Length: 456
Ligand SMILES: Nc1ncnc2c1ncn2[C@@H]1O[C@H](COP(=O)(O)OP(=O)(O)OP(=O)(O)O)[C@@H](O)[C@H]1O
Image 1 (cartoon, rainbow, N blue to C red):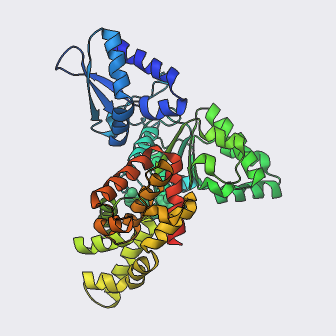
Image 2: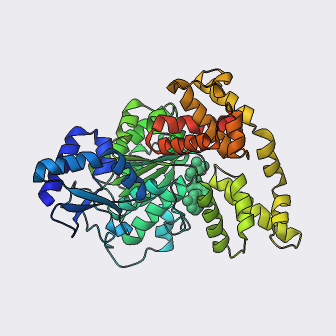
Image 3: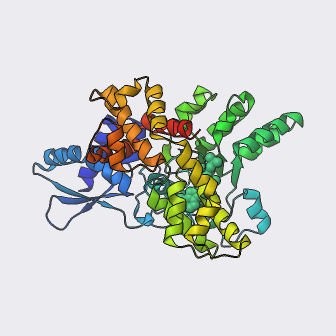
């Protein structure tokens, strides 16, 4: 079995671009299944990877199995039970710690407060307080893998996603996890704007050497919101050298950004291409269930009792930014306290009157159709025409999904507005877009841009 699996990995490594191999294949593990000699279980780090592998690679693995064993093979897919179950990529395994345990602390002493403050980590942002759902499944799995094997698995880890979706939370969670296990490590979280200020200061105070030494001495660099490097040439140059030095020394770098690396404005090509060396993962806007779970977790942390119907009202009206979602909950709580009332549905509606009103007032179905048509340079009439060419059908599906996400129209109403289509067509369109969003970066970016444009 081991020989088969390593031959299989070799073949994929040769056939696939490195990015794809690293993202989908490298993290899989093959296990024997007692059902028969050529029955196996393929263990994926999370559901997202499992589905992708099932759709894209399983047939190839089975075909290769047939060739290898001269007998049909039967492969079932399963998600790893726990994070500890996620395999470590094979690279540098001599220096890699065991995949089943976090890196052993180098010393048992806990860091002092001053030492902890040096890291600039936020102790509240941990894996425990991060709600997981389809929107951040892959990003979280990758983050946990990196947290268990800093400098070994994916370097750099590049996390991107829209505003307020939990990138900062996730990057701190990795930092906290690594630092807790390795208190002697030099860990530093830095926002890209602060890094820029450090560069400016280093030049002003003639302390460039000390600046360089400091950043190159780190074991873990967490750099947030790298889009702030836009056209800051000196900063980018300094970062380029620090990046190279750290990666070469196998020190972990984790980067967050509001867009996919290639779409970051005003960033030098040599930096962008380096961001591709490790793994790039997206965080999507959370779906309804996840938004409700986030609200519940937040309420629980603050020991506030919030009913399901109140959570639902908030989650239904605040869709694409977790920070705003939390802000809305705070507002409801403050409003109830101020008026000495319980947190009821009526109180929540009153407290969020302007948000609920604005969502329903501003975003009309026509606005979505017009924005999507303009974006894809097709006629608005094509939104309700019967044409089925890809260039028209895909934007139409996107518009249906956006209408579903951003307005309160029902499926039959949406179908009706898109040329009298059946509600099952709308459901199919929504599923298609949700599915494609995870696979097609360009489409995903288009959706972000469209959402922002529509919401104004
Ligand atoms: N999945 C989640 N579970 C729990 N809390 C979350 C989750 N996602 C985001 N949050 C919370 O939402 C708030 C905003 O998240 P965060 O600051 O990490 O977003 P961001 O993507 O870094 O935003 P920005 O683009 O503005 O830098 C934080 O309070 C964070 O704890």
